[in-house]
Image (cartoon, rainbow, N blue to C red):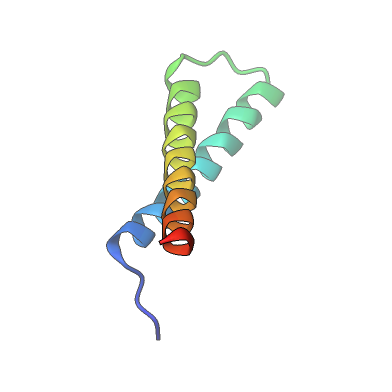
Length: 67
């Protein structure tokens, strides 16, 4: 079995957490719950982290391909 590196484990947890928080956010919107600003800020923060990791992967692949 292939072990994930620490950064890959962090990515998996960030993705799962982001999906759960996003589902909670849209569920609260659908059910018309009054929510504080904490939930949208958490979703945005984790989404930004995921975008950063994605951009980092793109840069690594480009450096590996171009030398």
